[in-house]
Length: 282
Image (cartoon, rainbow, N blue to C red; front, side):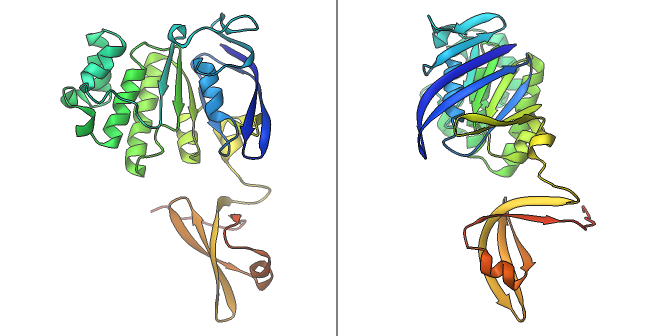
């Protein structure tokens, strides 16, 4: 069990704000942290890792990591940290990157096998693709068999196909090692697929906490489908108006009324929803 009750003054996009989080996280839970940029997600990860100071308390499995008198140094916290930029040692091979963390060849070989990297064990990072480098980073984070795995948007730079593959491998490692995992993500499909729980931060405060379905599924009343996107364009075709909306990696056309065309502005975040819809999945 992780018990966290911390406070820290930050300078956010709207000026000074107070990161104030009081939450308990169960052992073996997979928690996704969501929220707009500047809401305090990465800072919260860094406080958990001991890389930033904060006021308050933090205990993990009844071991005090932070209180009013002391803060346990990062080296003594049993954590793994996966960064966006991989942070590999460029002059070391894949296997050397892992063994630098802990001299446990058996565990290193097992991790490489789980992530399908065994044939690349003797390559340097520059000879690997982005997805392969991120897998090495993930394996390296697991070399201490961490109590707590922290991931800061680890898949954001990868293409959709590679993201899906690495999501499978993250889940596989999470389950095999029984690690408590906290991941920062902006991708609803990623959070739904991986997480057992989602916390949403806004200006340093938790504004939503629940299962991925409760937090991420955005329908109201009799709505059957609801998607958020960005309004890119509005054009008049004969007597109707057509809006072009970017939703994820797709562009969709939506017929709108003249009244809606007058009210909407290009660049706005919009919600596209429907009440009566019979979808076909092919």
